[in-house]
Amino acid sequence: MKLSHADSDLYIPDGLKAEAAFSRTTHLGVGAHQDDLEILAYSGIEACYQKADEWFGGVVVTNGAGSAREGPYAEYSDEEMRLVRLREQRKAAYLGEYAFMAQLGYASAEARERGDAVVADLEQILRAARPRVVYAHNPADKHGTHIVTLRHTLAALRRLSPEERPQALYGVEVWRDLDWLDDGAKVVLRTDRRPHLAHALMGLFDSQIAGGKRYDLAVPGRRLANATFFQSHSVDAAEGAAFAMDLTPLLRDDALTLEELVTVHIEDFRTSVIANLREEDKR
Image 1 (tube, one colour):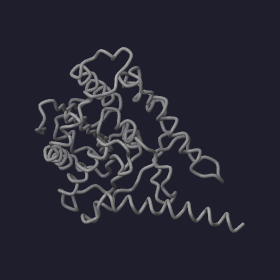
Image 2 (cartoon, helix red, strand yellow):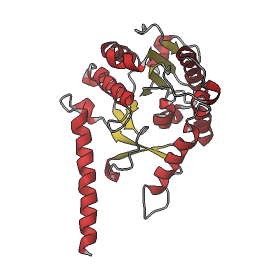
Image 3 (cartoon, rainbow, N blue to C red):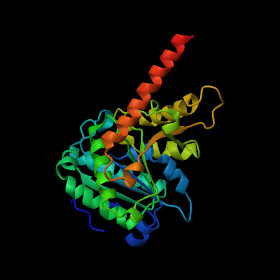
Image 4 (tube, rainbow, N blue to C red):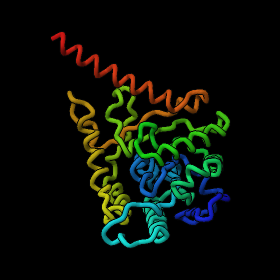
């Protein structure tokens, strides 16, 4: 495995050789930043935890150097912050027993400017891992680097032959939730199994939490809200859930664009809201 960037980092928590570590992977998460995986792919992390035949692999595209910082990290340089975030992500991979953790090492601007290199790195990882399920950012996310990462992920997946592609590709909420998706279109990923593991994973990212972003409170809060507000006329089926958009159609039809897919969901949302209003007007 030869990654492009000089700051890239490949970590295999149990010390297995790279080829074997990649080939055992069944679930793969691709995130833009350190801690994105623990937010968007927790369902996959937990599903593979301490399993002999299922393994979660992680990929983070950017290096974390431009992170917002306050408190004890206020005076850290970009290079110091890069190293802190790299170590935090390694710790999460160890705690979560990931098959491997690949940090590609690109600055956010580089992720845009060196798109071909990012896609090549992702393609190499996907060919080595051949996961059944991939968790990625969703096309309605409001963070620009998340969208760039999603585009690179899709481009890499489309370089694979149809038989090499995963069975499912999920675009999960991070920056902007997916509550607005019609219920029939939501992929509901349970996050309430092993809540202690979820809390422990989020808590490892001290540079974000002590640095001014309380993801450790916001993420479980969103998950609980999703579970409670999902169905209005029945008791909660879970105590935590993340919503995802099913992006698998993009792997079945290479002519389908992200814009076209998300437009369908937006129009369905508009139609549903207007129909509800008109139905109430009739009463």
